[in-house]
Length: 89
Image 1 (tube, rainbow, N blue to C red):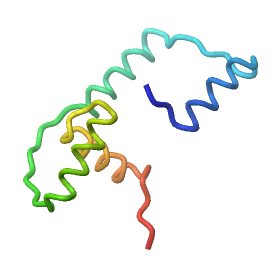
Image 2 (cartoon, rainbow, N blue to C red):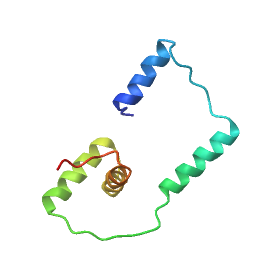
Image 3 (cartoon, rainbow, N blue to C red):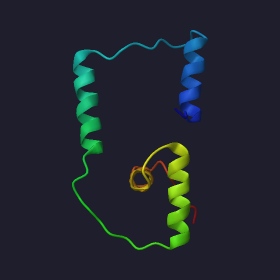
Image 4 (tube, one colour):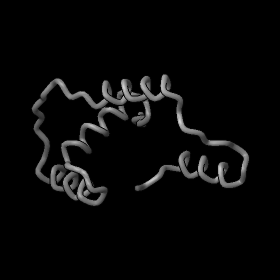
């Protein structure tokens, strides 16, 4: 599994003993599972038109990370609307 810089930093801090990682309690676990279920729920379908070149590139990138290309597209869109991806102006 690939980790981003923040995840790598957390693991390093745990190894150095600077933070303690514990399993979530039952209430926190239920809340996290509910949030994940809501995030993963796909209840709308859209159709978009993109160039063949972009589609081929998306399929290659998705293959490299081991996911379907539609999932990759959905993930990128989710990251954008969540503010994790910024578009330079």
